[in-house]
Length: 145
Image (cartoon, rainbow, N blue to C red; front, side, top):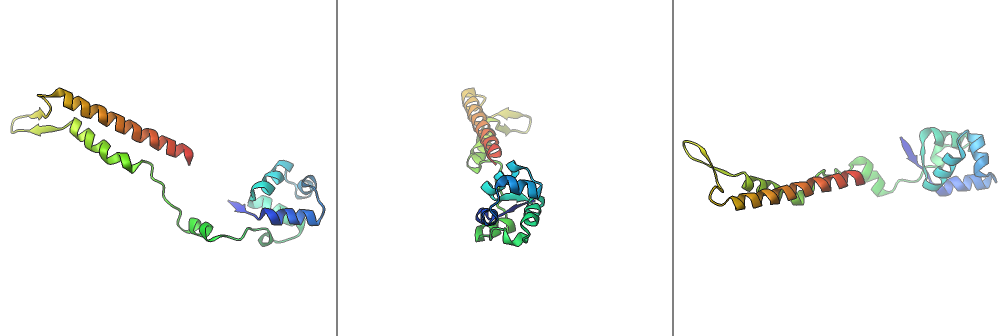
């Protein structure tokens, strides 16, 4: 699991020793690119954090970013993201139902739109468009996460 470190504290520790990023990479046995990434983002694996702390001869707590209230809330109760857009789900179901609606008599099922097939086709097309939009948007939401 990655840890959030204070970028300021990382740079202060390195500057206090007059070390370059290359020197820190050598001493901590971490690649230079990883050191650069950590100092830019403040995010590091536990192994990297422990290696840096060992090189600086400090504790992990001295580099950890103090948690803000929003970060604590996110770890306690992460928000659930819906896979589908609820705005389109109900109209899609209703139009699909209208497109395939039947009326039942004692002997057989009769197509409701038998006299006006254009109405049934229109509902079917609207339903297809709504369902397509629903799944297209859910794909976009999935890719953005």
